[in-house]
Length: 401
Image 1 (cartoon, rainbow, N blue to C red):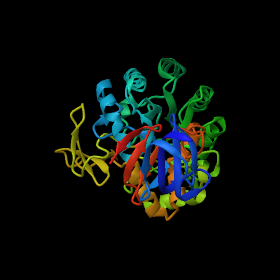
Image 2: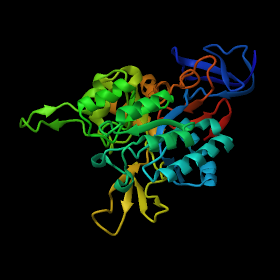
Image 3: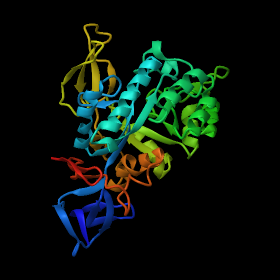
Image 4: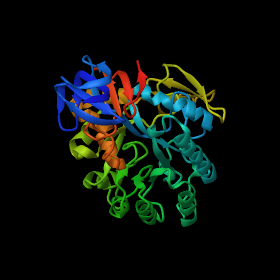
């Protein structure tokens, strides 16, 4: 056979098994053959990857930006120019995340993201939009401004879905808010993933939305208050949202691959208690991710921030504000490196957290997320330290170190 591209000689992390020295043959953006013996496989382009690992491309289902790109407020031209930075870190699919703002502005921004998907030469990279807010619990606001948080109403939800429902992949909301069950059902009926997050819900409130179709948790252990003291019994704890999402195996959880946001024991705990396909690694990255230590950025509202040790912190003359954590600057390859370091799990299992598992959560595992015959050739080639050497989307080289 003659194919367009042959990657050969490297460790291939295929869906069925790991090939210590294998090959992947690609034609028209799809994987057409793979195995251990590439004798007789002809290709228009051959790449010797014998020193490297061939893995499915990484999927980041929660990211607000990277480098100078800001999905929350950037114009079309900036996003079209900058979205390719994800390839540098082996990412072949992203879900662009919003933040709580006036709904009209959020809808306008999602329309810009629709144009990115339509006009970018890398349109396959942008899977859709994750609507994070404004239907969140005020006490668990995190980086969301209180002034923009609101209760879900049928009028607001209908407005958003009618205007940009085609672009929305997932929605994070707090289960304790009024009409949360109705919201869950409305999203599920549209094929949009209902996500629990920024919440201090009781066990019962969380369980109600899980039964209604909520299937995922936004950045577990960040913006989530899981337990509370029984007001009628001193030192007796009541189960909360954490108990519910850990009890129900239908619910997947995501962890930010950053030691500031998620201490090491939580990685070990989630690895132990959740089913193999219900653990997802994300960056929740802001603009500044991937940039050098000490990089200073200025937001459109005038605020200044600095990248420090994988997170973004405020710069302000007010000592009560200066140094405050604003978000993550981690990249997916570094997040994977930390996951392995913290848990000691195998390379294959760690990669699932960033490839096949998010693909399953998003419902796209039939076409991407693993190296298997017939799937899109969304591939990253990495070294033992997760340093990315090549990225292919789908089957076209979009990054080479």
